[in-house]
Length: 584
Image 1 (cartoon, rainbow, N blue to C red):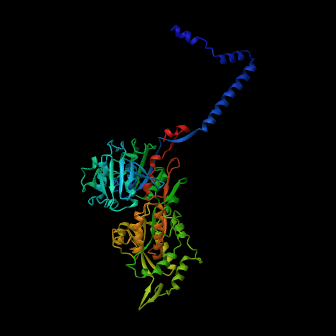
Image 2: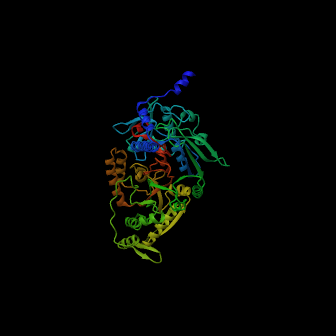
Image 3: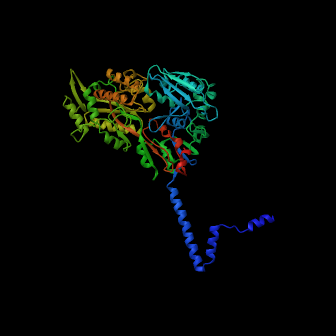
């Protein structure tokens, strides 16, 4: 103890400090005061200079923490990448599951569960190598057996997966525990997007029969490999899930996500969802009807991006004789003021189009020639009158003699019982009435429209939307082989030249070749006018400003807003610039 006391009481001699102490000892009271003032000023200035210099070398990087609560309309039923049908299903699947590859907001693909991949020279064989450390949320390693199992289940007709058509004719082969190949019957450039399909854990699903597949509890309490795992589920009095709590998956292939919690709440209607936004019960909501956006709480930030969907009126020339006339279809297209339609019906949350692809996918369209008239409808009517059509007051429409019969410009327009589509149909009907057409709008409940109108092709004209996707592949929508159900060629379009171009487009590998082929197809389609293309809607997202890292570009499905969810963050850290490479 004596040694410690002597050490603590010993005077420490620091040459510079000792000299300064001697100087201070020799100063008067005022001199000492001035000395300490300027010394303090020097220290404060030095600290300020150091801080200013540090700011030049410090950058903000995402940090873990924070959360987001989002609302959806409808409750998830199939949190399963093979069965997901509703937007609520797809939203949770996008967060819980991941595939061999992951699509990016920029429109490319990056490795996810796969470590690498290659495509054979003939474009028929796709080879993937799994990451050695890929795991499911329950800690089980991901193997090629899981990949093979998932694809074979998607191909199984008894499962009735919406993904089945994507895997038709594809042979999947296990090379070893980490290598798998997919072999196509013919080259198909857009096939690469199939590799983004979520992978099921075989060890949990293999005992589930095809008959039990849609009823398994694994469809609501899912285990995947995605950026987030389900940590808890709340149900309402009827036992239907109404809240999902999701936590970040530490072993996610692309790195642990930053947000510490994502809460998804589900509501029965859009009005209930908007009310929840107003109460602050949720912070985010997507895909709201444009007309409802004005009712959102003041200060709500609305982000928007092109949605890869095309809405138009598709003509069924097999059912309506008057629509077989090329000049009638041309006039009906001319009669629509697309800019006014987008402004009045969609609150400007859409882009007017005159082709089968939304903006962002297709090459720039030729600039339309301006019509020297104040009304597109008047121009369309004049166009028909110049070709022998005359307005008949008794018929209430343009008509003309065709042999011994009178041909009347009259037909029906079918669409779904959706506010936006009802309003668009009435806008189109009014424009066509001014052009001399007598059009009756028929509204159907969505299920009835699909089952009893679209599938049997029982309509004269159909106002409908097509989900085009990310690729220049229009085969399913316009090839003549797809005219009958379950094909998606709802205009029943048949043109040999277009068929050949669509077939070539499917196998073309280079982007420039694909654009050239599409341009030729677009020109051929425009000659025939099998449909009147109207607009490509915007995806709208009420999203909190305090969340950073979210990037919205053209998306095919609303669930694609989660493509970069693992980068979303609320918190940030300041680090030296040279250390940022260790924080990525």
